[in-house]
Amino acid sequence: MKKALALTSGVLTAFAVPLVSLAAVNNISDVGTFIINTINNIIVPVLFAIAFIVFLYGAFKTFIIGATSEEVKEQGKNLMLWGLIGFFVMVSVWGLVNILTGTVTFGNNTGPSGGVPSSGVQVR
Image 1 (cartoon, rainbow, N blue to C red):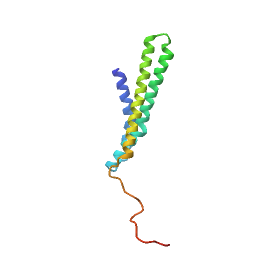
Image 2: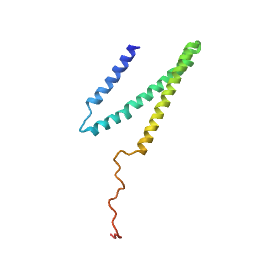
Image 3: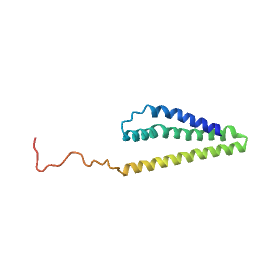
Image 4: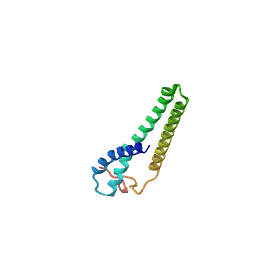
């Protein structure tokens, strides 16, 4: 188990180092944007893919490998359950974040565009 965890952390580090080292950082806003874009464009899809692979492996283990063994079937069912729980949690958090970002503004509200209204009728 420790070997698998070390291998996983090594692989994640190998993917993350080029992203961080090649980032053009001019100010703190760029750092925040870079981190958010990295999470949204790389980490979230990888987590969804891992949850999907776990679910598929559980289904394979339940119906193909464990056709004759009840213990293997139970392991496969547990993998399928944890894959579905992972999907549910990720979609729920993703939805909550989208609701929050759609309803809460953090000081970047510029108001109505078009400038200051002028009085009278303008004919061109």
